[in-house]
Length: 155
Image 1: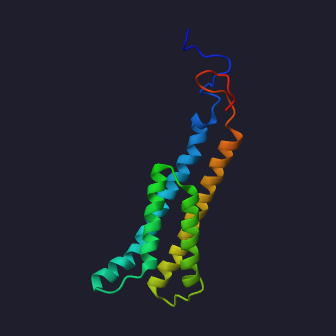
Image 2: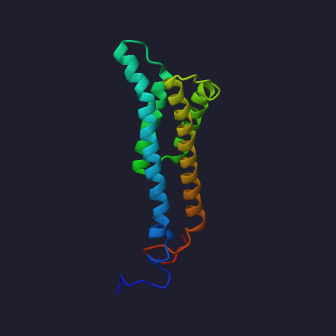
Image 3: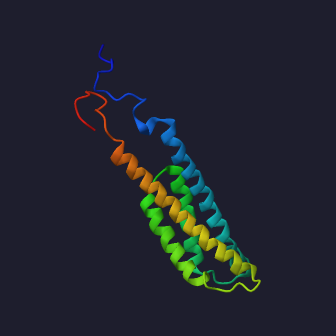
């Protein structure tokens, strides 16, 4: 009888964090974050690889972009750090947006690629923002219930 559920204990059907309907949007967002972070790595690492192959100096901005993409991909897999990812991708968008948004490509494939990369950075930042807002809504609006062990405390 010690393990019987009391009228105060949380049931799995009422806890929104355990329902499938609550997990599908989160996993969809995390999958998109991972895909776009890998895209960022691919877009910026091309220039790093080209500079390395030619024995030229590789700009630290591209190293930063690749590091942010890596942090974003790892964060998407570990389900952590949305605030850090928002800050990093916002800075990345500002850095490369300032350099490439108003640039005229004039048929240059590298400039076109970098202009697209800037918008991918913005999409990444917005995905992380949506994830953070979704997490806050789940925390503040769906955290009601009773403690698991005694059922006396409101959680």
